[in-house]
Amino acid sequence: MTDVITPTTTGDGAHGPSVVDVAGHEHEEHGPTGLLKWVTSTDHKVIGMSYMITSLVLFYFAGIMALVLRIQLATPSSSLVSFAQYNELFTMHGSLMLYLFAGPFAFGGLANYIVPLQIGAPDMAFPRLNALSYWLYLSGSITMMMGFLVAGGASEFGWVAYAPLSNATNSPGLGPDIWIMALVLTGFSAIFTGVNLVATIFYLRAPGMTMFRMPIFTWNMLVTAILILIAFPVLTGALVMLFCDRHFGTHIFSVQGGGSPNLWQNLFWFFGHPEVYILALPYFGIATEIFPVFSRKPVFGYKGMVFATLSIAALSTGVWAHHMFTTGVVLLPFFSLLSLLIAVPTGIKFFNWIGTLWRGQLQFSAAMLFAIGFLFAFLMGGVTGVMLASPPIDFFTHDTYFVVAHFHQVLFGTAVFAGFAGLYYWYPKFFGRMLREGLGKWHFWLMFIGFWVTFMPQYVVGLLGMPRRVAVYPSYLGWQSYNIISTVGAFIIATSFAVLLWNLWISWRQPVPCGDNPWDAHTLEWFTTSPPPHHNYSHLPPIRSERPTWDYHHPDSPAIAHGEGRPPRGDKVLVSP
Image 1 (tube, rainbow, N blue to C red):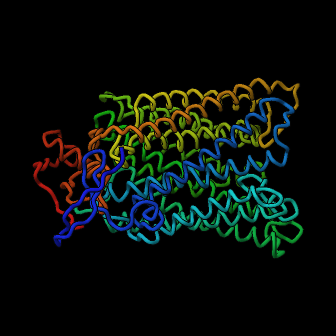
Image 2: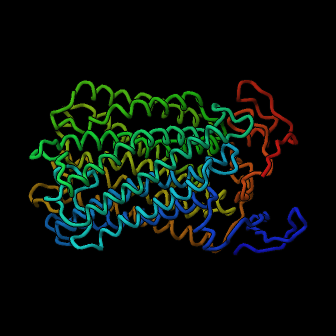
Image 3: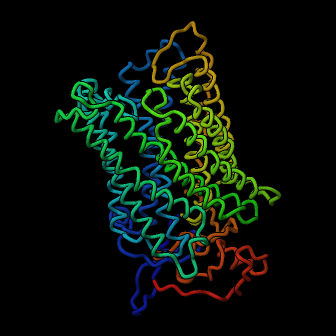
């Protein structure tokens, strides 16, 4: 079923087009429609959807690269791809997943779409800057993929671009330069979005939406934006220095010219470790939105969650050198202690999530299953992270597949499990229709099983000594069986993503209307229509807690915010468009 254009009378008596969606809501069209709308719009919802669609397409490209890598490693001396092609795929898989999917999907897509709705704002603070941010991201994404088309191929020095592997001698050609320019473009996109989100959250909150009534998701996006403003300029500066080394003979990262390769590691990881939490914190916020809704309870320890998020952000800027234990140039006790300490606020979040679920009226929707899957996946990644914070263990496992397994369990466990939880949770808000819950549960179970089958053997083979970033390995070391199991798991994950595509297709072709708030959710975005109108709200409920929609629809429920009573249902705050 498609949207239906019907005439409607505007305020001056004229007739303008409006759209009736599958849920039966009529929305007046603002500006162009069709493809021109997607190209020219400054509406935060259109831009957020553009981010999500683009990042999901890149996610599937990265997944195909991962399957090729796993097939190559399933046998000891496979010749499916050459060593150079393997390094290109390895570099581009990591770059797409980290730089172009995990961050942009949450920070560019979900934040753009959801945060203004959650705080009662009509749009982002700087709509044109918001549009520029997306086009910079899209330009950077296309630029990075163009690396495969130039002479010499894409960059092959790994997604961390360690010096001297990334200098002009060891990595000649246009591919590395294209990679650098792509990251500069997407880095500016992230910085502009960070500025926009901070301004929007501080200055465009609705009446009554105090800082400690904001949803946890919005809090996490605020903290993430501040981390981006700290970390991404450092990466941009490092990339400019690397480009100068490659073309202008500056020798900043070259020993022969008086520079230091370790300087690149310090600069990159000063960006890179906050980046881990730039990628993780938005997905923590998604899970924190979902657990209360499907437990029929308020979030447990709201302020504790906020302060734990702030603590994680503060500590994340001081632990970058735990990636450099084996270089011999860092103070091991200091960085080991800080790395262990950052587990404390993360543990507080876990206890609060468990407290939210405890004795709740649990509803195991697809969104809830993915959120619970995130808990298990990230817990394993976090436990092994605490192990790697110990220098003796790090010395033993450094550059082995133990680290690969840990890294994927942290980032796949957050960006993919919690990301899809958010997709299933907010999809009705985006389109006014439901995804198929049955297919969603098939998607979850296939991905959950495939996840553990893929990465648990990598811990074992890493402890047996298999190094990372290798395309072949000796047949007599007993690594093949673990790699075969890991490859089978990767194909199970790929099957789950095929189920998602089918779910998206069938749900779009045969829509099931869902109403404005199918989950009986708590936060403000569920008060407006699904999908929201151009300026988001015609009126708002009184905001007297962090659950204004729940308060409005359940006026007789026990008070949860400072003992305040509930307003009558008719008490609304008008919002001028």
